[in-house]
Length: 286
Length: 293
Image (tube, rainbow over all chains, first blue to last red; front, side):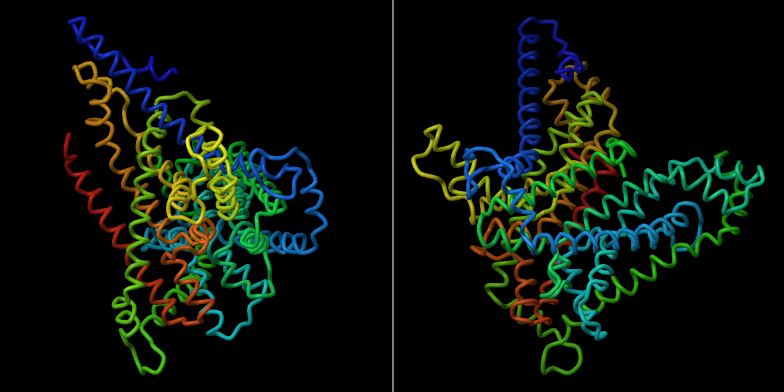
């Protein structure tokens, strides 16, 4: 409640005015806190519910849950299709992240450090996959791939994921690069380091937190991606989100809740990594 | 000035050494081929109709005179506006509290904002199915409290989709709001209060107008993402109604009519761009002279 003390009470020389001011003051903060805490609960509720539901002991999801157990997590491991699709998603996400990091880190340098005509426009272009609805991109990419006569395959899926996730890497790397004092590079070079040594020993170590965070965002975006994969995975390449989507549309299986809980833990890991590497308050400004 | 000016000579040498600007080429070429060309192709498809030689507006004519299509378009626009309004009403007070609270609160708020943002949309929609269902949390609470006798139908209704979508989009409203409101000096509001305005009046006449750029940015993002949301309406709506993204998916994958699918996508993008453009126009007006202050 430190917020209440932060704002001074209304000035009023007459007692009645002061009481009214205080009342209005209290009412204002009551409304703010009610809406604000409501919003926080609203944001958190689905995550809490799905994790809670995954520990049910019964064969269906209901509230309140009938007993708690780990049986659905144990059972999950026995589902051949779930394991196969999870492995495929992991492979696609790792490959797409690795490619995105290479392309994204390289692109971030000139976008921040050098001056060339059309830099602003190029930056907007490289960020545009973040704004374009991924469903529209999925459709466009499917049309493109079939027009050039390439059959749907895992590499094609990986490339389409790269197109959607590479902006995350560019953005976080560029943001860390902007925070890095160019004098550091100049000092290294004036002390005799060549360009590569400056890059590898001075610049890159300072960018690791930004690159790691961007890479983690890219990884989870690819791992969780459904809309692009729906178009480009084809009937034979089943990723985990496609599997989960089909499972849930079929019925409310606690196994689906167990998969969801695992995905929530993955998201938790990414948020914690971002906080540890850069700090959430800084991430929010990127 | 000294930072940029002093080291310019060295900076230039560093640039030359690494041939720096060329590092942007791999990513740019990749996106040009694998992102821009497919989009151009999508637009090209929307101007072609089966059995018609050359470019044609037949697809647009067909869709824009179709009552069902117009109804779907209107539903999508209305839904997106409603969801954006809900995210604004809930997001603004939270962003305001954020700027008035200490570091522990700030990190907690950001943590709770970013966690759903990084959680799969499939998982979040599934959670809402569980919450909104007949045996879900909301109905269990309503029945237990005696407010209703029988469970209320929320799942597979438009209301259910509104509730789920607003939660999914709230982080996109919150982050621009927080960024904009952090730039404001809290002493502005204090000054208004010390000059005799009530706290509420100071809030509405000082903080709200000055936060307009954040509101516009958040509203644009929230609207554009809601109108193109596919997963949540499909899962929580359960096919009881159709929005624009459902239409795109169905014509592309089910009826295999790529011309109609791409034309629908084109119209969806055009509507989203129109809103973005309108929002920017409003933002510009605010920048040159805040109205209502």
